[in-house]
Amino acid sequence: MELELKQVRNTLIVRIEGELDMLAADQIREDIDKKIDNSEIKNLILNLEKVTFIDSSGLGMIIGRYKKLKGKNGRMFIAGARPQVEKILYFSGINKLISVYRNEQDIINLQGR
Image (cartoon, rainbow, N blue to C red; front, side, top):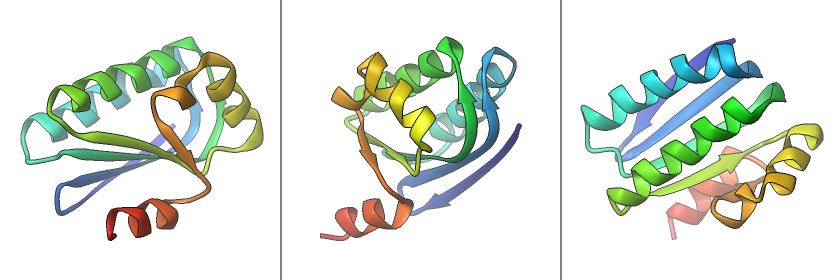
């Protein structure tokens, strides 16, 4: 699992590569929370473009970050999920809480309006 965190103004862009499973979810959660807690982050873009697998631990990590940002009156977006990952997001109902977009640029364009 590889993780890239990039802050643009008050938005944190998180790019994950590999499997978002029990082994990776805790580390990703810690890294994201540290960044959110120590800065003025209000929005989170979770780029799942290179995620090949997601399990319940990964879904739990996503929901937890959503709740954390919602508590700060922030917003969360998911970008670029592959079809098999997107299917899991839809079956789990996450798409009802968090908007899912084709790519990061669509979200950035939306925020720029």
